[in-house]
Length: 168
Ligand SMILES: [Zn+2]
Ligand SMILES: [Zn+2]
Image (cartoon, rainbow, N blue to C red; front, side, top):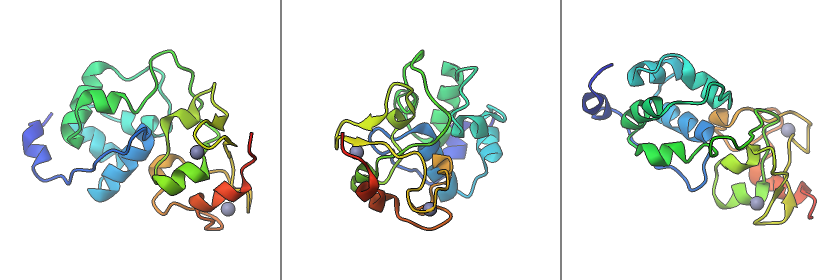
């Protein structure tokens, strides 16, 4: 592993959003710094796990040491980084990727709770979460790839999806 301070000095920091999922944050950080998942894993000395975490493949669950190493490279404290994933034991779904368009319109990020098994609606807006594009039916890509904030196929803006969500 390279010296973390040395690595950080040439990386652009990215400020996490509140409740942002790890996948979404890592995607933003990597694009800002032109890094592939494996390049980020190499910098942190944690190998090939980044791509798996971006897909919410969390078995085996990341260790404290891995979080610490990654946190030093991305310039976020390890507690905040850890908070981008659910508490250990909280069931999480890798797919489908879900979202609340109304939330996205307020803060453009994928919230970690949208992938919790127990969650099917947005408590903030009382809207049912959407699990595929309501316009063209395409599944959403993993949040790490949400560069443009819209459906990759038909370009429907995620914020505009609020109009299609059923209220509960
Ligand atoms: Zn919402
Ligand atoms: Zn679409």
